[in-house]
Amino acid sequence: MWELARRPRWIAALVLCLAIAGGFAALGQWQLSRSIDAGVPVDETTETPVPLGELAEPQKPLSTTEAGRIVTIEGTLLPDEYVTLSGRLHEGTPGYWVVGHLLADDSAADSPSAGASLAVALGWAATEEDAASAISQLERDAPDSFRGRYLPTEAPQEDDFENGEQNSLSTAALVNQWGTPPTTVYAGYLVTDAAPAGLDQIDAPAPSTEVTVNWLNIFYSVEWAVFAGFAVFLWFRLVKDAWEREQEELAEEQHVN
Image 1 (cartoon, rainbow, N blue to C red):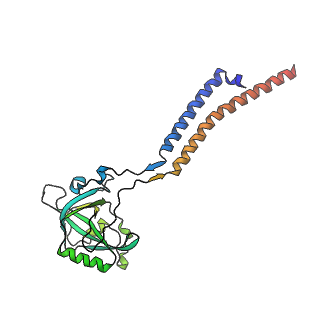
Image 2 (cartoon, helix red, strand yellow):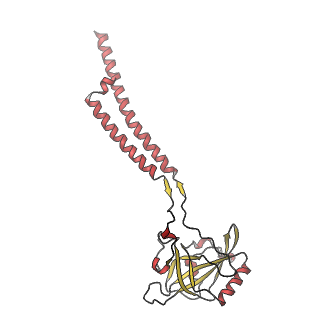
Image 3 (cartoon, rainbow, N blue to C red):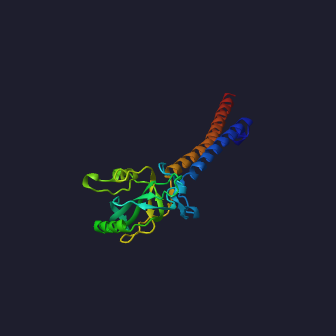
């Protein structure tokens, strides 16, 4: 059979099958490389504080490069515009977030962020009474400089307004609740890294660095490997079939003679 395989016709067929198999193998390798999705490593740039006005612009969607960054901002927490969010977890315990309406410092009048509104998650309280007490103290003495992690807005449909509950920090929902209509609004919200008196700091970890496996891509890479093997097997099968036909013809000729 191998004498038949060394004929130019079958050598050319082998080269073609090997080229096809090589293409399938390359596709399998590419698919396998896409099967592992690694989180973006937390680097020095991500954790280095940057003024929010330099990182993002109001009225524009939050980009992946902006989300999760440590930022700083100065401004005024508007009185009587604090919101309490229920059902927020802190070390596994449900409680309340106190969220303020920050008006960015407009000292730089030519800046796009001048006078922009920003939702600020100031801290966590175990009870609604503790949250109300902290708000009362903030009304009397609120900070004017903030630092924390800038995060994407949450979905408003998670709230149960019919039962008087609000548990998601949705910028769109807060705009309709704030008594002072904002002119421009940041798309995300800020979680401060220093809680005011009476509140606990909200946990806002750095962006995830977990590695996840995409099993569907692994399945596809196995499929490409099977296809590559089948291309070589097909050549072998064709050669063997041709050899068997020649043997049958030779046997018939000998029988006739």
